[in-house]
Image (cartoon, rainbow, N blue to C red):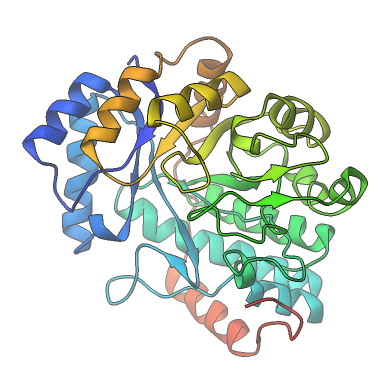
Length: 344
């Protein structure tokens, strides 16, 4: 099925007639789910199925289900999961044990998502917070050491994939030093390139083989003093594809966020010109969605090959005792508290 190079949101828990017509005509590559789209498991299953009926194939359905502050599927229908800092606390005490727990958490999250038809999760987070940074990352991070962060991120990704859910690595090449929340404004990071390569960028390098990644709307002035990574040829080519070596499908963070300027169409065209494969649009505004659909081309060439390779890694979940796993996870996390030095 031919798709266009964007992932869309929708406004509510059911598709309106206008949204159905849009999805049939615009043919987005995927759908992203937010809390506004959820009222019950049964309703969510119907929404996912309705989207796939409109686009005519088993298109990927995304969500941000990290745990902590960022969890779209929430109680009372779904369990609450911890913020990423809790895995870092466990890792400080018992590295190998913490990785097993992180993998278990990823597997449990995947079980929740797979049951309602969601097959892509915007996790893991490989950002490393720095002193004085905006708390938008904060306790979502797994630690302050790139090796620790990469190890925990890899374990969570392994758990997701074992449960039939693809991970999205974020936010390439690093959002941790940002002093502004990119939802609201454009962060500018002035750290020297050597420092970035030793810490922020380094955490992503061991994760370069993951199937999908998401860019950061952050300017790194030592490399490109003007454009954020999402729309910077230099950052995509030399850092994300070059130094980090990321080989998967590269999607933008939400193109409607406050960090970016210009029309939705101009933002999308700049991101694709910089080397992003897919544009993400989240807010469910049908006018903006229509503008985006007119601006982006059909998925083709190397981007289509990367999309095909990513989706080829979807698989049936492995056999799993979810009840036993939840007991093990709860016991381990009851002993963990956020690191004293972690930004919250």
